[in-house]
Image 1 (cartoon, rainbow, N blue to C red):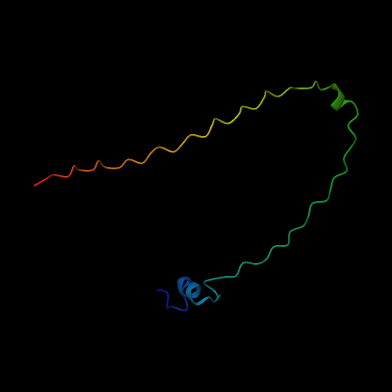
Image 2: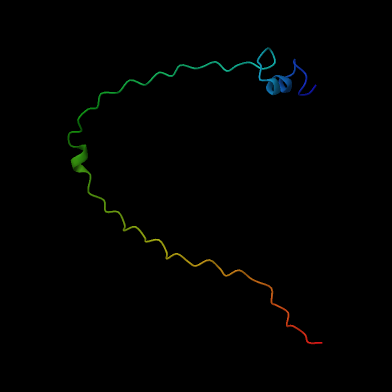
Length: 79
């Protein structure tokens, strides 16, 4: 059972065909939900006290990337 087998799922995938061992996925109709009528908030919004958010912290300064380590050059020897 491999890619050349027309009856196996792997064979159907390689050939690009569909059948009993490889079904096509049916398209599902998606219905949009009906918009709900909003009721006007009477006093609920007015009673809540204003909450102050703390100031956002600034991002730290960008660091330079570390220097690449290069092996030390050998000193030239005179003969």
